[in-house]
Length: 240
Ligand code: PGA
Image (cartoon, rainbow, N blue to C red; front, side, top):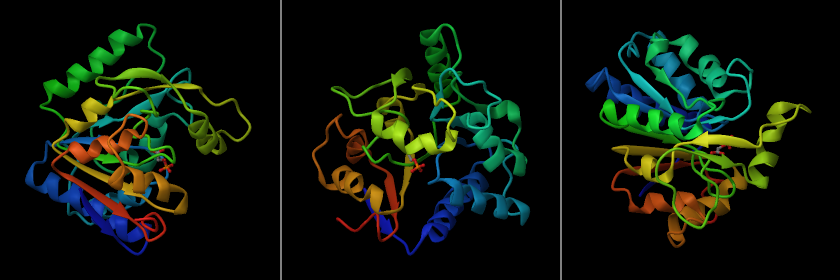
């Protein structure tokens, strides 16, 4: 893993946003793996500013999002589909038809997960995957578990995830389950960038980089990937 510590989240967003733009300049129809949460927002803001400057186009890009809540209407403001629309898709020239999500409301969950995994493979796999990390070391919604997951699946969210994300639902009942790409599928991306900022992530970051590889800390699986760059701010890097 390559570890890069930058001063603040704006500098990290610039570095990651530039990497995505460089890939799209080289390969306009690249397959992008996208993430939600607070961590990726500065990266999306930088991509938007590069798009507005005429430096990059998303017109031929294809995107796959890591995860989506179950039992939440797609048009709910806290669905990850809504998040991506607000934070990136509505502000660049991406074709909505080329943006792909797991359908957390599918009645046949297994079929939905197979559909999503097969679609990623059909487009040649993810070229560049953006990740955050949970305080419990999750990537996507792969919570601590006894074995590493492979393909997409439905997961019960861990108590620490419910606590971390409940603020977004401001008193409203928050979903307890989600569908997520598995760890095995994430590791098939050709290149991975992970962003972690703030002291609340410092322990998970240390375990991911310096701890044993264990499904109890799903991000530790990234130690096995040949092309991972981890971007940290000083607080997230403070225990290294
Ligand atoms: P955050 O979430 O960026 O909102 O901290 C990251 C994650 O849980 O993967």
